[in-house]
Image (cartoon, rainbow, N blue to C red):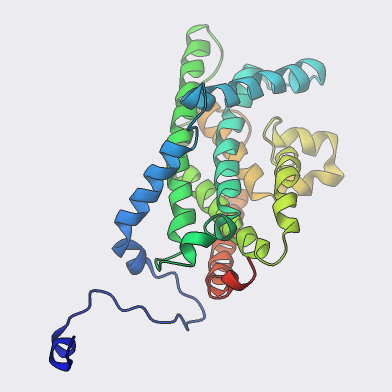
Length: 289
């Protein structure tokens, strides 16, 4: 290419170092939207590839988990779920919880799992964790369909269940849950590039987190039985989301506007801090992964 040709060339994109303290750069993410959709399709197609039951695992996991929790926590431990059938109570919490864990675990090793492609081709790295959160919406939609099926079954059996009028805001609640999982996942992914311990911590850490997130019990039960430890659940954003989910879908429990406000603020703060650390890590992770 001679000098005249170089002068007349118009570049579509110009890749420059990111020197800003904080940069979300949604315009660049939008420019790479085709790649984002490609990653979403890849995640959906390959998740249960070479499995015998395939997408049936979407159904098996929440059903068997809800049955197990119902036997252990409701039948053996005697946790009372009021007028709501225990199985439906647990299924509501598990469905939302599964979406969070899928987002968290799927994004928590972004740099390690994609080091090969990150080291060869440039594109906004944040596209990868975003694609995981979007693709997990399909799994959540299928599992939520199971919940609706059992909801209708119990309703026509005469169970005292009803939707709350605030159920129209349920998609907003799922959006907050997805952003929270994305933020925590990017934060852990950045730490894993230097400290591999976090990759081992995420496994049992998620299980421990579930027990302080009010997945299988109402928040009021903790305040009644263990008031000295109730703050562990009360200040847990996940517990507030799950309790509000059951309030919207089953009309049980209570709605705390203070708790929701705290949850929204905590989610935004976690996400912004995680983006900041994620952007800083992507500049140098290739030397440590």
